Length: 151
Image 1: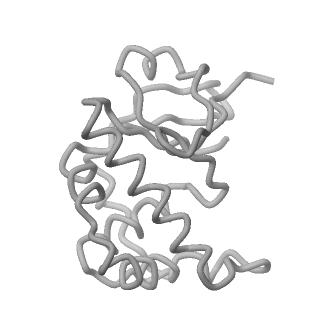
Image 2: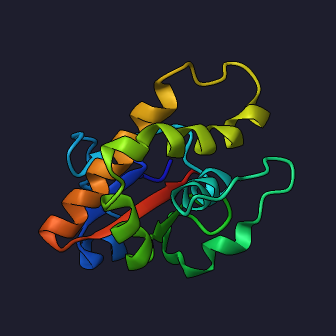
Image 3: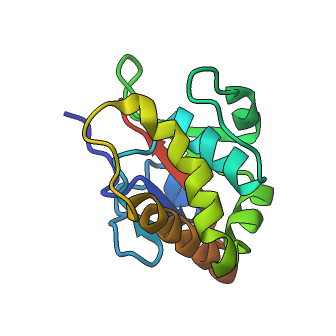
Protein backbone atom coordinates (compact mmCIF):
# COMPACT_ATOMS: atom_id res chain seq x y z
CA UNK A 1 0.00 0.00 0.00
CA UNK A 2 1.28 3.44 -0.95
CA UNK A 3 1.56 5.84 2.01
CA UNK A 4 -0.72 8.88 2.14
CA UNK A 5 -0.84 11.94 4.43
CA UNK A 6 -2.60 11.41 7.77
CA UNK A 7 -5.03 14.25 6.94
CA UNK A 8 -7.45 15.10 4.12
CA UNK A 9 -7.43 18.92 4.36
CA UNK A 10 -4.24 20.70 5.31
CA UNK A 11 -1.91 23.65 4.91
CA UNK A 12 1.69 23.02 3.91
CA UNK A 13 4.41 24.22 1.58
CA UNK A 14 4.20 23.60 -2.15
CA UNK A 15 7.50 21.72 -1.90
CA UNK A 16 6.12 19.27 0.66
CA UNK A 17 2.91 18.81 -1.33
CA UNK A 18 4.91 18.09 -4.51
CA UNK A 19 6.44 15.13 -2.67
CA UNK A 20 3.09 13.81 -1.39
CA UNK A 21 2.95 15.63 1.97
CA UNK A 22 3.63 12.36 3.77
CA UNK A 23 4.70 14.08 7.00
CA UNK A 24 1.37 15.89 7.44
CA UNK A 25 -0.70 14.75 10.44
CA UNK A 26 -4.12 15.93 11.60
CA UNK A 27 -3.34 18.35 14.42
CA UNK A 28 -6.57 20.39 14.26
CA UNK A 29 -4.65 23.60 13.53
CA UNK A 30 -2.98 23.06 10.16
CA UNK A 31 -4.52 19.72 9.21
CA UNK A 32 -7.76 17.78 9.74
CA UNK A 33 -8.82 14.30 8.68
CA UNK A 34 -12.36 14.41 7.30
CA UNK A 35 -13.60 11.17 5.75
CA UNK A 36 -16.22 13.10 3.78
CA UNK A 37 -13.68 14.94 1.59
CA UNK A 38 -14.00 14.11 -2.12
CA UNK A 39 -14.55 16.11 -5.31
CA UNK A 40 -18.32 16.43 -4.78
CA UNK A 41 -18.01 17.62 -1.19
CA UNK A 42 -15.29 20.16 -2.05
CA UNK A 43 -17.45 21.49 -4.91
CA UNK A 44 -20.42 21.73 -2.55
CA UNK A 45 -18.25 23.52 0.02
CA UNK A 46 -17.15 26.07 -2.56
CA UNK A 47 -20.76 26.66 -3.69
CA UNK A 48 -21.82 27.00 -0.04
CA UNK A 49 -19.14 29.55 0.85
CA UNK A 50 -20.21 31.56 -2.19
CA UNK A 51 -23.80 31.53 -0.86
CA UNK A 52 -25.06 29.18 -3.57
CA UNK A 53 -27.23 26.11 -3.11
CA UNK A 54 -25.72 22.77 -4.15
CA UNK A 55 -27.87 20.17 -5.87
CA UNK A 56 -26.58 16.74 -4.79
CA UNK A 57 -28.21 14.97 -7.74
CA UNK A 58 -26.80 17.30 -10.36
CA UNK A 59 -23.96 19.15 -8.72
CA UNK A 60 -21.70 21.28 -10.87
CA UNK A 61 -18.11 20.07 -10.55
CA UNK A 62 -16.80 22.68 -13.01
CA UNK A 63 -16.39 24.95 -9.99
CA UNK A 64 -13.30 22.82 -9.21
CA UNK A 65 -11.45 23.88 -12.36
CA UNK A 66 -9.15 26.12 -10.33
CA UNK A 67 -8.12 23.26 -8.00
CA UNK A 68 -4.70 22.12 -9.18
CA UNK A 69 -3.70 18.44 -9.08
CA UNK A 70 -0.25 18.48 -7.46
CA UNK A 71 0.37 14.82 -6.64
CA UNK A 72 -0.96 11.38 -7.57
CA UNK A 73 -0.08 8.58 -5.16
CA UNK A 74 -0.45 5.70 -7.63
CA UNK A 75 -1.20 5.88 -11.33
CA UNK A 76 -4.01 3.36 -11.34
CA UNK A 77 -5.65 3.83 -7.94
CA UNK A 78 -4.88 7.38 -6.72
CA UNK A 79 -5.32 9.16 -4.23
CA UNK A 80 -5.02 12.58 -5.68
CA UNK A 81 -3.76 15.69 -3.90
CA UNK A 82 -5.26 19.01 -5.01
CA UNK A 83 -4.35 22.60 -4.13
CA UNK A 84 -7.23 24.91 -3.26
CA UNK A 85 -7.19 28.13 -5.32
CA UNK A 86 -5.91 31.09 -3.29
CA UNK A 87 -9.24 32.90 -3.74
CA UNK A 88 -11.09 29.98 -2.14
CA UNK A 89 -8.65 29.85 0.77
CA UNK A 90 -9.20 33.58 1.37
CA UNK A 91 -13.00 33.10 1.28
CA UNK A 92 -12.84 30.17 3.71
CA UNK A 93 -10.53 32.03 6.08
CA UNK A 94 -12.94 34.98 6.14
CA UNK A 95 -16.13 33.02 6.95
CA UNK A 96 -17.43 34.79 10.07
CA UNK A 97 -18.88 32.94 13.04
CA UNK A 98 -22.29 34.38 12.16
CA UNK A 99 -22.28 32.56 8.76
CA UNK A 100 -21.09 29.14 9.93
CA UNK A 101 -24.62 27.82 10.40
CA UNK A 102 -25.81 28.96 6.96
CA UNK A 103 -22.73 27.68 5.13
CA UNK A 104 -22.83 24.33 6.93
CA UNK A 105 -26.57 23.96 6.16
CA UNK A 106 -25.87 24.51 2.46
CA UNK A 107 -22.84 22.21 2.54
CA UNK A 108 -24.79 19.41 4.27
CA UNK A 109 -26.90 18.89 1.12
CA UNK A 110 -24.02 17.02 -0.56
CA UNK A 111 -24.06 14.33 2.13
CA UNK A 112 -27.72 13.39 1.60
CA UNK A 113 -26.80 10.92 -1.17
CA UNK A 114 -24.08 9.24 0.90
CA UNK A 115 -26.55 6.94 2.64
CA UNK A 116 -26.39 5.99 6.27
CA UNK A 117 -24.88 7.07 8.45
CA UNK A 118 -25.60 10.68 7.53
CA UNK A 119 -23.71 13.36 9.44
CA UNK A 120 -25.47 14.16 12.68
CA UNK A 121 -26.68 17.64 13.55
CA UNK A 122 -23.71 19.83 14.30
CA UNK A 123 -21.22 17.45 12.65
CA UNK A 124 -21.14 19.34 9.33
CA UNK A 125 -20.65 22.61 11.18
CA UNK A 126 -17.76 21.04 13.13
CA UNK A 127 -16.19 19.89 9.84
CA UNK A 128 -16.63 23.41 8.44
CA UNK A 129 -15.00 24.92 11.54
CA UNK A 130 -12.03 22.61 10.97
CA UNK A 131 -11.69 23.64 7.32
CA UNK A 132 -12.01 27.34 8.22
CA UNK A 133 -9.30 26.91 10.88
CA UNK A 134 -6.98 25.33 8.28
CA UNK A 135 -7.69 28.18 5.85
CA UNK A 136 -6.92 30.76 8.54
CA UNK A 137 -3.65 28.99 9.35
CA UNK A 138 -2.84 28.82 5.65
CA UNK A 139 -3.30 32.58 5.28
CA UNK A 140 -1.52 33.47 8.54
CA UNK A 141 1.48 31.22 7.85
CA UNK A 142 1.58 31.88 4.10
CA UNK A 143 1.10 28.21 3.26
CA UNK A 144 -0.91 26.65 0.47
CA UNK A 145 -4.03 24.66 1.30
CA UNK A 146 -4.70 21.17 -0.06
CA UNK A 147 -7.33 18.44 -0.08
CA UNK A 148 -6.84 14.72 -0.59
CA UNK A 149 -9.23 12.67 -2.73
CA UNK A 150 -8.84 9.08 -1.57
CA UNK A 151 -8.18 6.40 -4.18
